[in-house]
Image (cartoon, rainbow, N blue to C red; front, side, top):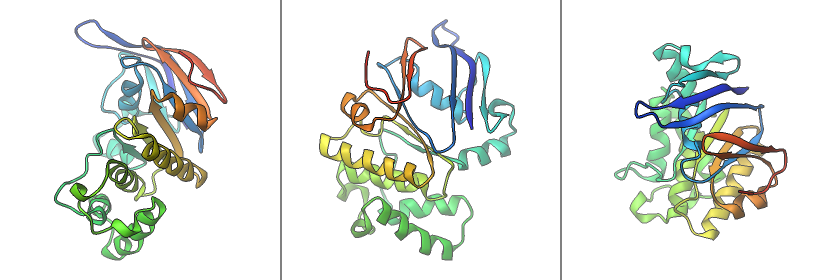
Length: 226
């Protein structure tokens, strides 16, 4: 489904953040990418959604080279890949319901579809009782769950979660990870980047360990080992 084929990335200042990385990710997999800050984890994700371009190699999504797509095709690609960030990126003047609905509106969905789907997805992330709350009225964990609901509302094939628990306490971290597992169990491919050892060791799923832009290990049922 996703393939990074001998991908390297260097910037104009000469810094090489990825060095000959080759990774394949199958449909419905749950893959964690781990490593210290600067290991290249986030750059990989930016390459996948065409926010960055590789210096060498190619990134393939369903055997199509991401970086050869036209602008309109990149828009379609990004609709198939939901993204969750560490800093939530919610609209402060919209309720939880409205934040999720906004993603559907942007995708051209009808009012009827929005009214049917948003409550269902907020229930999936255990926020059915917080639909009318604004971000300022939500805890960090609740904000992240709204962000996850927004990322999956248009039923993407892949959910990318970039350090989604980085700002959360252990209890909220566990809640978010359980929701990611639930989404994966429903058939969505999940790619998680994290440096949280406890999260990785409890998942017992595939772990790709990166160091200085290279793949150090790729374990089918890995633990956090650096």
